[in-house]
Picture 1 (cartoon, rainbow, N blue to C red):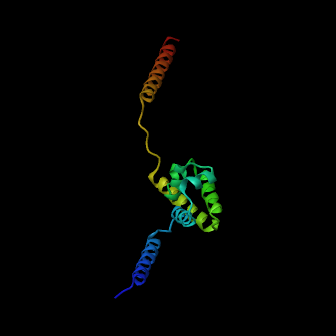
Picture 2 (cartoon, rainbow, N blue to C red):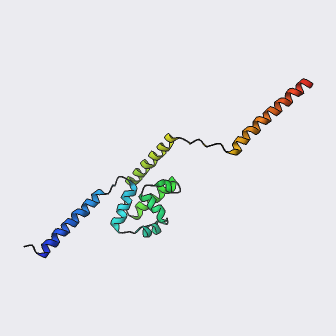
Picture 3 (cartoon, one colour):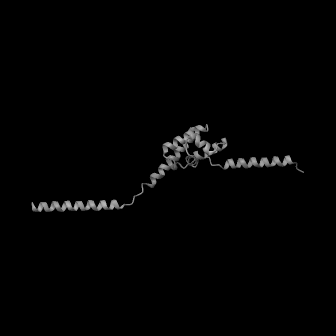
Length: 149
């Protein structure tokens, strides 16, 4: 018959295994995921870290989700990620390299998409007609002046 301590030891071993499995399931291939994992490992809450970094929780979540388009610009995002690393006392170079690769990939994707054509507005259409009408009027005036002259 098993003792209560044996049962508790088995359960704690199962808990340790499941915690290790959960740790291995975290995708650490992005800077945001690494920062989030380190923040949770050190026991910081989102609000606390956002306050220390002087950014909103919305920006902190955007960094952790690698949604850098939700931040005010790449320059700001670069600074936020670097300061986040420094606050958590992590080495900045590997994360900044990953960050730069993500930014470069996003820039290339944007280039491939190209600039979308904008639809002509009413003002644009009116401006075309006005320019055409002015050209015709000036041309007719020139022709009439030449013939009378």
